[in-house]
Image (cartoon, rainbow, N blue to C red; front, top):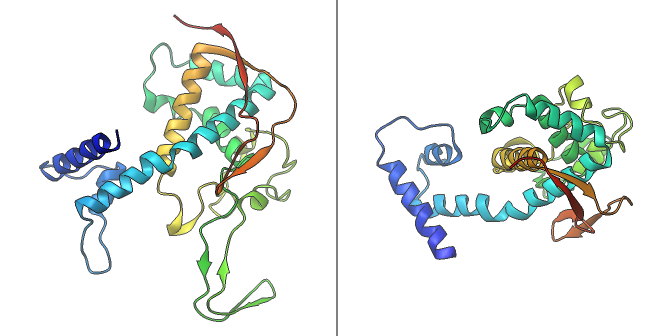
Length: 245
């Protein structure tokens, strides 16, 4: 299977290189247009490795984010009803690009990633020259990590931070230093756009076609798995009804 995926990726890279048209805004086009400090583009092997990272390394993280979203949505039935009402406005077989732009769906995904971030720390930054930060003297060589979880729990940024309230993302815009589920700066996760796109489409499809309920209403807690945090019990759900043929 891995060799087949590799062949398909290399075929897509070759096809893009042979196209006589301006590059698009998709991930592969952006990677192909990138240049290092000497002005050199990525080789086919480097492009392949970056795309494999997106496809494989982001699998468990996105699946965990979707599981958390299903948990929070079904803890409060009003959230699911509001989401379904917005989805129904798009009619049957809606355009995926329209689905991912739904304001309340975006808010639900953001609130899920705020309250249950998959990673708790950002990629580290290394101090290059002596600097004072919030009263602490930092010397070269020290590594600093931003704590995503603690930032998302600050009551001055998010009143009642332990509550699941998607509306907070409809009421105001948060900066990249206040809401950072994918890290921040130039070292933020390269798979952010793909992960959010997948998350929105999967949730929209499931909610539009099936009525689900939580098998257990007791609180779900995070469990560390490697460098990420997943639902400890896996968010077990019961299929109650199929909504569409």
